[in-house]
Image 1: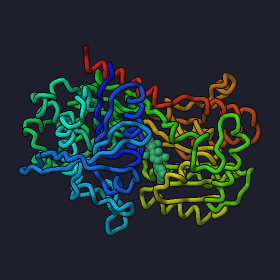
Image 2 (image 1 turned 90 degrees about the horizontal axis):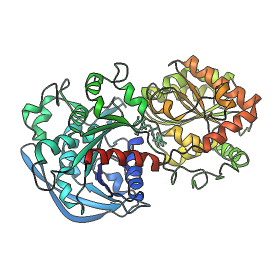
Image 3 (image 1 turned 30 degrees about the vertical axis):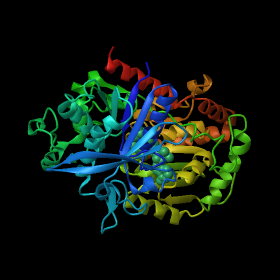
Image 4 (image 1 turned 120 degrees about the vertical axis):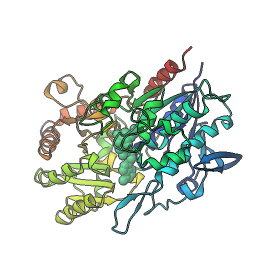
Length: 499
Ligand code: ADP
Ligand code: GLC
């Protein structure tokens, strides 16, 4: 029997994206549908959705969405997820969602008078509204879902509404909820007053349910969902500890029976060096050693660096936030320069990191290239052109860039945490001998450990090219396709749907 799933997310690649959540929200439903299931997606209608270049139609559906002491009428638009038959529904409420301008005003944040990013003051109301609208959308999907799959704090109230408000209504009794944590550091924590907007009974505001120093939307999702997942098995273990749990470790340990880790897939229709439209010389495992140098030269040109085949290029694509270990990269850069490297960084995020990176660029103009902003084509150019890809994350729930790097034959240098630990096999002498190595890993969160690991990688790159080539071949042969992740989700859905 096919499973019928509605996936709700605050961003979906192709329409609105700030990070990996968007990639997952676009790829998982597609992969589920490809396996014969029925899937639909729901997201807010941002300005960026209208600019996405995919036709979005009106549906004539108007949802009555309770919001504080009023009921708002909210229109629903619809499109099809590109390269699939999966419908995507857009929840319209212009005052909440049509404020992004592709520049300073983003999906969740704007830039304040100091030039720093700051959350919108009404994010709580915005996503409480979105979560409630999801439940109202159910009767209009055209199919009766078995599962509502909510993601991150923005949709944390979906399982709560299902179980506390809609459960008794016809059409909702048999629906089960899955809640996926993509990053536990972002919890959607708001003052208690937000409870008034939710329309939920006050009794739920207690430390065992919605309360955690205020109203905590991520906690709400964890407590009320039938199953909770996160995006790698290692991260599922880590978030039950004080080091990684961001205060929710106790809660997660007590719910460990419904918590699992499923590694994200890599969308190979989009991230495949053989068919990549953005790179100058597409390649596969047979042609990589002939074509990658052309991609490297193109990368060097685009970052205004001397085109030099012999200089190893280290690539970084990341949100410039402390999670990503940007401080380690900055501290280790003089060491990378000594090792003869060039470094290219594509990132958007905190101004302090941008300033420090810009400073390094000014100091080593022929060695360092930086691009601040979001630039999807350039992300592909870096994956294809770099010799090593750096991801020294402090923590990493799953991480997608290392999966892209594997596919592009750009060995990732990663810190052993979360999904990085689950997806990269370190080039130890034994793993090299067994032909299992796919990249380079280190444990300590220190610039020294990062530097030493890059140094080891460069020893292979320069002095043992046969080994380095073997790593590239093994990396490119890995299968992190969405099909395998979708299969794991499907299994979980079936478990909670029951007979
Ligand atoms: P996270 O979701 O924590 O940011 P992931 O590795 O899961 O980390 O996913 C990041 C996604 O966002 C990848 O698809 C990556 O290529 C993309 N990305 C991040 N920063 C940029 C940027 N500045 N320009 C283009 N793409 C970016
Ligand atoms: C989060 C995590 C990242 C993960 C992504 C998609 O943004 O930081 O590690 O890959 O979600 O699940």
